[in-house]
Picture 1 (tube, rainbow over the protein chains, first blue to last red):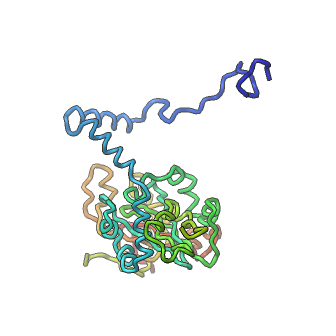
Picture 2: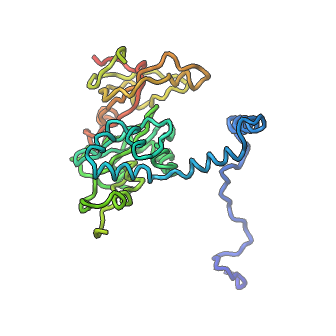
Picture 3: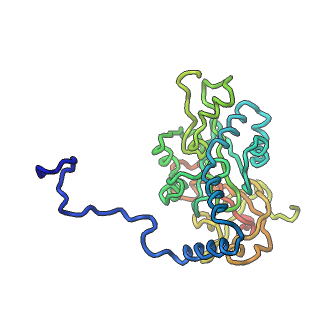
Length: 219
Length: 96
């Protein structure tokens, strides 16, 4: 290390660092150009304004797993709601004031003998209205390709180990429906308020790669 | 809804077609046998909807359940694990 290197690097700066390429490096694809041209035309012709578009994106980005968690918590405390949720996810979401837009929602229930996990192998379909934006790994080729062949190995990498006696059922969202997992209520949370329960329902538990947090102490 | 071809519990086989256009049937279930789990509803056919078409005739959409051992023939982690996939009626035939 040279004597005048004062910022802790273990080498001098006579050689360039390799740069990670930017996501938007290189020439835009034909489809990207088409989207840009269409957007410019829509704004130019006053179909909508740039600010309206920005607001819509902001609203979409602001959706979070809180909507799904609220539905799960209600299902845990109210068996009649649980039944309605499993019969018609869309109606059950709207009942709690959770907006679902055009989503046809199917809720699949975990039991001691069945564990559900969700994927979209063809692209990255995800129940955005109830869970918010999908995590990067959900859209990655590795997750999409592997979870349909070796779901147990994939779940183990998320820290979720299930006994062989529990059937794993993978739901591939190939077409018009979207899926959400209704996890099992953790031991030791009976009698909790819906709000406290909802706080223990993670996004990943509703995708099915994880289980809800088990409480260490009653709040 | 009365003219749908399959009912829950019916054994079906997925057609083995490989069109180059958008069709939303994953290759790993083509030619495979499964069981209808439910009818999801009637939807526009994505094969024409995605290509400036009208999606007509609309197609019943089913969830079809496959077992891992049938899909992966020895590579599966547990033969009793399952996969459910949404498939449009014109891709399904009654299993013999």
